[in-house]
Amino acid sequence: MQGSTIETPDSLTSPASTITVGGHHEEHADLRVWGLLTFLVSESLMFGGFFAAYLFLRGLASEWPPEGTEVELLVPAINTIILVSSSFVIHLGDTAIKKNDVQGLRKWYVITAVMGAIFLAGQVYEYKTLGYGLTTNVFSNCFYLMTGFHGLHVFIGLLLILGVLWRSRRPGHYNATKHTGVEMAEIYWHFVDVIWIILFTLLYILTMF
Image 1 (cartoon, rainbow, N blue to C red):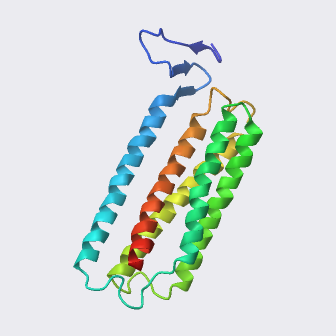
Image 2: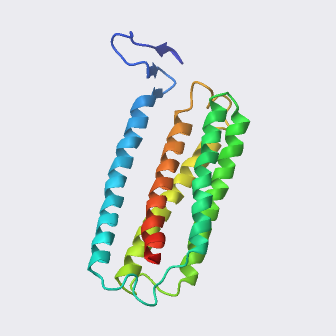
Image 3: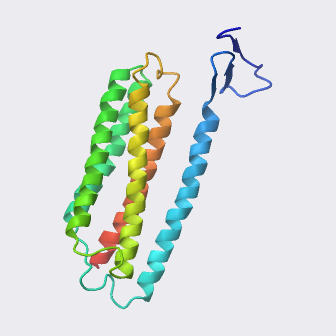
């Protein structure tokens, strides 16, 4: 039967389980969110490895960062303000869709995407003006690897946000009761934000002392 829906009894399935026959639509919202959280845990372990290696190498060095590979604080500080603020902005989009405000969702997600793009542009500008490269010394190697890997995650986050914006064009695709994709993009973006705060502390703040 085209478009018919089969719902299993509550005693046999979770509330999130709905199967649509013929429409090829199967949604397990809880499972998708848990899948994302599992992925983020694995990414956290990877970043944790970077952080541990960085602190270990710093502990072995007599001078850190070595002369000639100092970091500038102004651009990264501005970037940090932008990225941290964007976490509050993207949450406004999530709040809007939970009130069936699709236009509000689009507005706040567009602003978040612009802020993320500005962050990446600031990072590229920083790379071009630092005066040293990936292979200059151990510090520069750690610096470029960690900030570059984080920048890749910001780029992926931008793609998720743009994906939400694209799908929001369909009438009823997101609403007060159907917004798992919106929440997943927000969770990922918060993750990117938290990782950057740790990186900013390790690579910029602590090197000033």
